Length: 279
Ligand SMILES: NC(=O)c1ccc[n+]([C@@H]2O[C@H](COP(=O)([O-])OP(=O)(O)OC[C@H]3O[C@@H](n4cnc5c(N)ncnc54)[C@H](OP(=O)(O)O)[C@@H]3O)[C@@H](O)[C@H]2O)c1
Image (cartoon, rainbow, N blue to C red; front, side):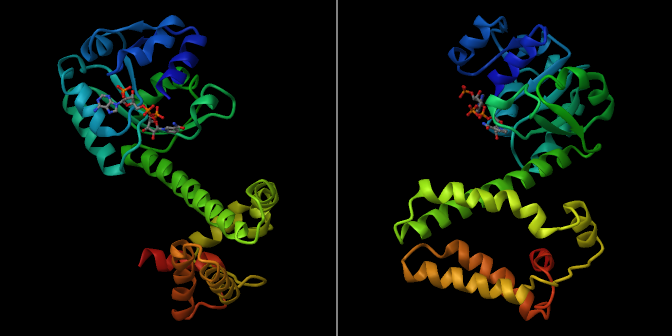
């Protein structure tokens, strides 16, 4: 990700200084015009805007713990994944060293960085965001979520929650149809039709309206009740067990619907299961 970001910034005409723990991984961006710093302090000292793209926030402490003397007056933008609390702790730490802090959640993979499809959630210091917005826009469309540095991280996690759950659903379903000889090559293009139809299936008047109803505590079940979907969840579970496909995922889904039914919400729509998750 870091290399894709550097290439996008270089393409936009910005001077970029890079540092990476394994220097050889910076070779191609150095060939493309980036300057390689000898150490983290030299990298930080080279500019006002410091962008981090690392495995987690632990890596940031490892790297910048040796560069605290040069942080004052600069802006740190950490585009790494971690928990919202780790993000908030990092913001407090950065401010204690005189630096501004922004959290970023990058919503596209490396090949899409710098394209019109790239977008990044930010939260934290609004003044720093306003100052650097145009530069950050070269990575992806910047979307600011407020001054809580944990918020952008949570938004990122929420998207990845959907993504990983979806991948697990695809993996399970592929194994399930495979038990009857339906190949993944046949199945995946078929099931993608369902993907594209989901917004219309769950909200004929648009997902914004669906969200407003959830926020208002309304979960109309006309046409697709929790009782019906719970029965379907039972069938998926039984079908999986019958062909010895792992039932961990169907177990979880079935439990969510049955909880809502047991709580007396069988006639409501699927969004009612959110209440059970919060409890
Ligand atoms: N890949 C994606 O599609 C994608 C999409 C959205 C967001 N993200 C997020 O972007 C971040 C980077 O992802 P990536 O795919 O670029 O991962 P990556 O290729 O594994 O790069 C991880 C980077 O972190 C460095 N690092 C890890 N631990 C370190 C430590 N203790 N000290 C110093 N450096 C350390 C690595 O240095 P070395 O090179 O020396 O190992 C490397 O530069 C992650 O937080 C990821 O969740 C990724």
